[in-house]
Amino acid sequence: MKNIRHKLVGLFKTGYCVPQIARIARNLKEPATTIHYNIKQMEKDGIIKTYKAVFDYKKIGEGFTSYVLVNLSPEEYDNPERIASELAKIPQIESVDIITGDWELILKVRTKDIDVFYQFVKTVLSRKGINKVTSLNSLKQVKTEFVHV
Image 1: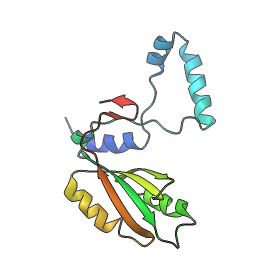
Image 2: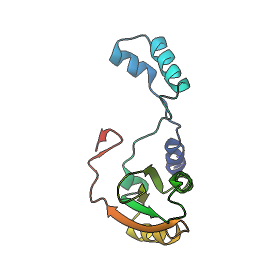
Image 3: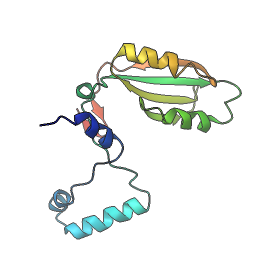
């Protein structure tokens, strides 16, 4: 049979997962129609933004995780949303948060290994508007996206 895992991973990362209505209904002892209605209402109200699979990232070639603290240059300091929005479009960046303290942004970056991360730093994080970065590399992930791994 044809191996299309990499295609599925890409779709699952962008929201092609759906709740299992029958399973939820059994668990909550509520009719499936009630579950379906409530989920659709939560989607409409913007409470649920997307559905996403939780992966064993090593098995999909994204086993290296780094949290990157970013200082913006003085000309970008007044509008961190602009740089954050640009960075959010980069596939290796899983999350971007605007933060308080000595840094303006924190990024969660996933790559295959440290060599790929190094190339990422050289090409992506050495851009205009970014003054300084510090990386905090994850040694082992114990919990991700509300799932104990």
